[in-house]
Image (cartoon, rainbow, N blue to C red; front, side):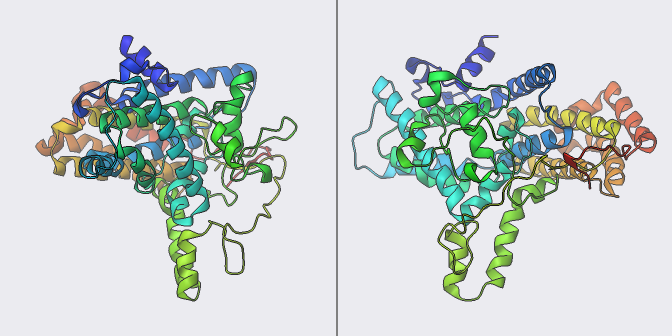
Length: 443
């Protein structure tokens, strides 16, 4: 209980300075992993409040897509240290320009707190204004619902773009202090991804809040490229990128050009694929390089950030929602939650496994998530993939190399559940009765 309460305080950046004093890197807790169960509990609570208030409720498919992106974004961490942390440690150990700050000082706490958040602001702004960086960040903005699961929708490539913005801190802040603040900065941004908290009064002037961040995720013209803050909204007020939420204009979430898929790999890499297509299509080396470093909407003849003539939102707001049955959507989500529980266990004990078993597990995990995405996308082959996946779940625990990664599947109860699920795939109605809901775009 104490650990859960501490993780909750981390999520609101409420640890006392003395609680962040760690002399060694290995002593710093992995609060992100510890928060996984809390993420699920808070999402269930959010759903209950949204249902009670009659607000837009999270959809199985959109929630799945967001949580899947979070899973995929962490897979590289099973094999290598974060480039963000590795580069930081290297600079701290080899570049000696300024005196080092002590690891157990309130001054170090506040310098890191403010410096970390300022670094995040400029990374986040660059991720919207530089096309190759946007390829790493657009995953996060592809959700068409706005709820706590959206916070988990992270790009696997993002850390390979963000690391450089924190290196100035490495000139004087110890790595272990940077590590704990990077976790607090990240986890703070979880709770602001919600539609059930309206306005926080005077806190709106200083802190990034759900209201401010709803604007950031909107595709309404007034929302585009606004409110980049992590913790302090004052950065946006200082640098001219602030916009307040408008009470008389409903926000439409997602991308201007929606990706219209729940496939986990397409969600991660679709914009990178688009950039590659543009590089071959556009003539001239200068223009080809400009495709990489200018804005996502840039074309030859346009300003650096591209056109600011953004399309107006059409009401009622339409979202991508293939017409699969509620039973199939619920079935898929239950199996996804099982995969998530298994993944959490592997993530927690990843240091106990060698590279090859983890590699095989990652391939199986990606196949599992791709299967679920195909079902939610209403692909014809989706259920066939699911049957193949269920059979593999019974077979995989028989291989000693990866047996310990699939211990849950050795239990009789789980095996019976898998067999019943296999037969259920032949009985579930895959397509829902057509509903006259013009706010949902069925495909």
